[in-house]
Length: 191
Image (tube, rainbow, N blue to C red; front, side, top):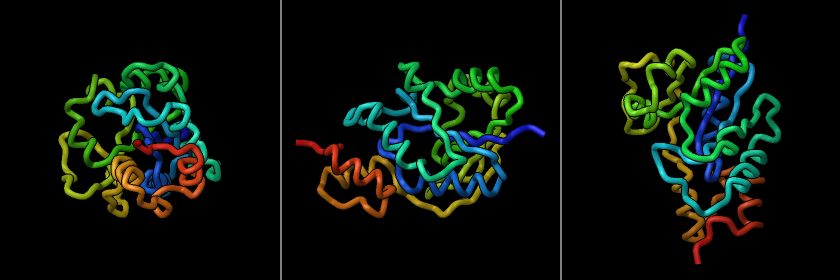
């Protein structure tokens, strides 16, 4: 039987508790052996905030996953630089590990965006897409998606950055270690 590994890609700018709760729910529901967090260098569908370095985003992600032995981080997209195309990454990963079934986790907003993904038809041959519900996005698509219901949250990294720029607390939105790192390094502050 093949090993089942989930993948959650993103900018993680910063990583937050909803990222973790989504992954935990999918891992439990689909009985995944492991989950890989895949931080992007430059996502093709949106702009990075540009407020923190890749090294800071990676450090915050490491802090977020430190106490979860089945969570790991794959840095290949950060090291590759340039736009991060899921198809290129999954082509590499499936070639390196043909004994693994990959489950690529995306939010309802990204499910809606799938027709615009680079090489989507080829990508569908490499991974199982797992969609999680998000407020105000439909749960229907012509693509083969495994749907996992999670507690709905409209929390986003963008909202956290905005709170920080307004001097509002984020302690209940990110892991404590991430909140401490952001405060210590004065990240996302605008002067």
